[in-house]
Image (tube, rainbow, N blue to C red; front, side, top):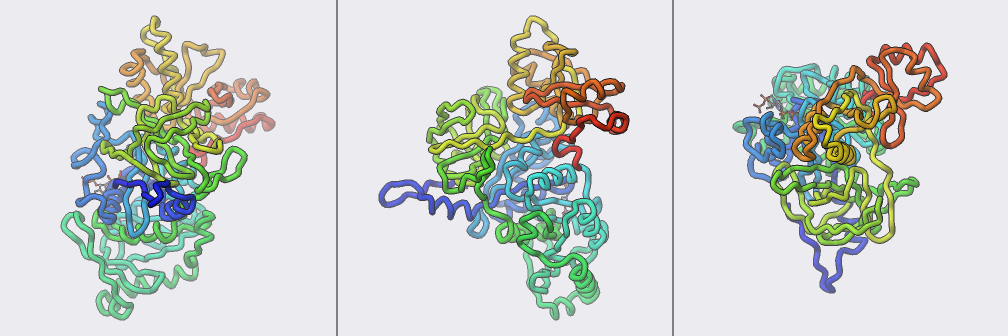
Length: 541
Ligand code: G4P
């Protein structure tokens, strides 16, 4: 979608009132799910409904599908997966929707988590047959930590799956959120006829289209018509809806926004069933961008001068140009291409000459953007993950959370003469957040430890060390699986037990590493006074 700058008769730019109005019609969200739950399919279906693209299948590039594969690395191409993430923007009703993509591979990384620092809401996509799976729970833990409201979508209802009420119990038990279904399926999983809309009691009857390639027509029927059309399925849906009224309660906007409840929808992304309802829920219920709190906790209002933060940096997308893209989420004010802003950490000016909407391989120049929007800045070598950019009154947003790594490996240079390239490469990968780098006196400067959330980050790092920084490396995996925050006073007490090590992350944090949870338990129980605190996210799940 091309967004053009509003022109005013007097030639001035948008006023603060314009910015408030533009922010109010933005919805910025991400889909959290376990691989194969249908995230790519849902993304395509949403885009189809919003009429950004004419036909499903053009957004994501999974192997065998047509589309815009973000194949910036050979390994990505070879596997037909998307390692990188960006944003898709489309308009629906009078709203501008920003859907931030998360890497679709099973082996997800910190990138996936970081996307959640840039959204205002999340859609938790659940496979009707599988329920809440591990990665969904890990990502949900980040949403809970950040207080992001979550809409739950039970997908693949066209296929045999679990009982709808049992799924609601699972959502309640595992997330702690009270599910408040907005729609309820008519027909059991595998026999999806439509949904009972609990808000008005009516029946939305779905009609299948060939291959789900076009928007599925919906028929709105009254309860009496529904009872005549589908006597058994409708009666069962009504009975279950009555049960729900007694147990789950109704949607309450304040409770949803404060993370107490989760509205639930039933869908079949592949048949485009329930997708329009999801867009309506996002527009009607999901929050618009609000002022982001600065390091002192004071929100910078959306109509304050421009501010944004970098939530993702991506290098090497185009081997010929070695470009480096920094994705910013706009927090306040107007972004206009070409404007010169201040780079918070250095205080230096940063020119935004090349600004783009990016999704997969498709890039489009962007002229103007508002709070909630995502912009890709090209040739942004000065920008690092977590950096603040601003115009006018200075602001600093808190640094982005680093997440609990679960995989660790010692990095060794294969060509000792290249120690400069080795050091530079490691610094660069760390500044982009590709890996966390841990050091200790014991291991020395020549043998830092890479720590990652998903092992694919190791592959990306190794590949880039060799091809981009010309410093080939070998990784030697370490047996640790768990990292906890600790302090100087606890080091001796921790390392007295085998299967442990204490290392320092570059932000100064001391991390205690354990081979297993059990070893950590032994250490903690043996010496109760030790400082051992969970890092965010991975352990919460
Ligand atoms: P992901 O991005 O979450 O990993 O999931 P993706 O959309 O790729 O979907 C995973 C598989 O589930 C795909 O099948 C997809 O067609 C299927 N799927 C997605 N939504 C639905 C749905 O609502 N109903 C049914 N029945 N299937 C659904 P695949 O065979 O692995 O791939 P493909 O060959 O169909 O692309």
